[in-house]
Image (cartoon, rainbow, N blue to C red; front, side, top):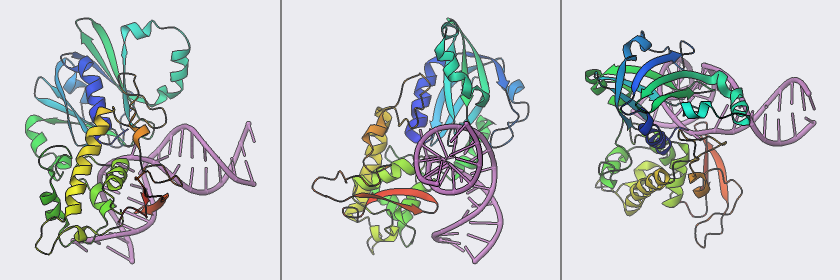
Length: 296
DNA sequence: CCTTGAACCTGGGCGC
DNA sequence: TGCGCCCAGGTTCAAG
């Protein structure tokens, strides 16, 4: 569950358990995810205390007190769950129901806290996720972070910034917004939703959002606002839970109930007075959902 | 430079 | 019940 709001929700769900905990043992149940796990991974983190959990774009960062940081990306199907001692004693169906999936439990953080022990388990059926390890100094020049654009919430994402990125480019809006170098953290769902909210077509060329003088047109201001708002709304809702994906704290995000375009092919457009129908097209191999009537 | 398409994986849903 | 096909929240790399 991997766009920015989902990763932020994971971070918030894991923080109370992980922050301040002693990382007693790191159990690696396979040598690789998408990439080989770091060399001596377990030896380099075991016995350290976790200082803080943070996030950059879709990356979860686990900062250890000795200055090392575990970098985790959830890919398409990665998730974390927490098991505390109390849960272990819970009998019955709950465990059986979950056991089917246990073959995809790839990395287990065994934690020690004042109130007892807990496990944080990384599960990822498709294994598009990965984990890496970096020191504080390496983090600043970490390849995956170096070229990332600004976070979609905050002051750095502005219409003026986007105008600079869009000027003279012929890309469609959809692919520009999916580009992590333009904005870091958006994915297929929230790009569709932001475009629907701002009544902009995913196929529109980005250069048409900018005046000849290089200034943002009014609709580009609208787009920047829509992006900030949809991400903020989704974080407040605890992200989107597709296919019964549960969050780390066991609860479900509910932003999927707020989808206005994503996954709504054939349904009526929800723009006031529009009367159009949401359709699905494919852009560079990925589904785009939008209303041709009101998104121009 | 640009864009598209395939690749990396597994599982769920659907039609036959 | 099973098989084959399509689809899935991401990223990267090759080819045109």
